[in-house]
Image (tube, rainbow, N blue to C red; front, side, top):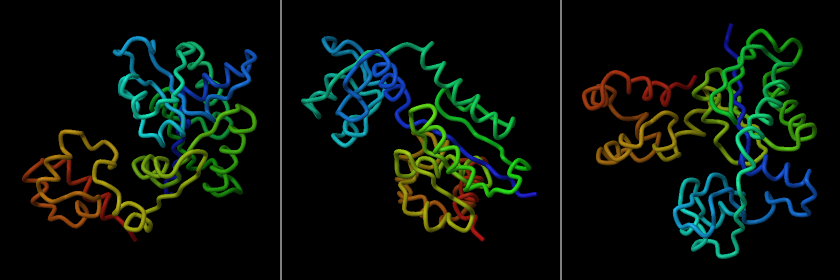
Length: 238
């Protein structure tokens, strides 16, 4: 039986969950709708961005950069403190408990993302239908949004969930690899180490498609047999 895999990724998790808590506590501002970040003390240049809104992202703000740098890119940026790991864990658990209604085969990949193995759990629905159902329920019942990747293995499902955000469902099946993956920067290949990217660039491999079409034996000579799997996934379409 072909595996049926979903990857669920909360959009801007720490900022979204902080926004919900603020609204619960009487705030009249939804920080998801303004240029905003969750980060350290604004007065301290050493403070860093933990999470960002979509409008902040459009200004070029990046996760893990300093608040000082982010403010230079986006002068009207608003900084908000984290509401704490306990609250974030509570929202993560609410999502997890909802997902248990669909399958008990759940792998928590981080506090804000997980893989669902839906093989044998679909009954009279398709995998894509379940993805849209979960997306709708999370938005309406939990108050935040997720991206969902739909595929037959974890790597492709993870890659799919990283496509256009927020609040999207994307498929990445084997016959879609060339169309949807090959034009992406090779740095976006899941689990490809940062130190490997410049080495690939030095080999004139800039896109995932470049890697897919590169001689496998040369990749193995340069990086070892484990990289053969990356090439295989990139080429795999039927």
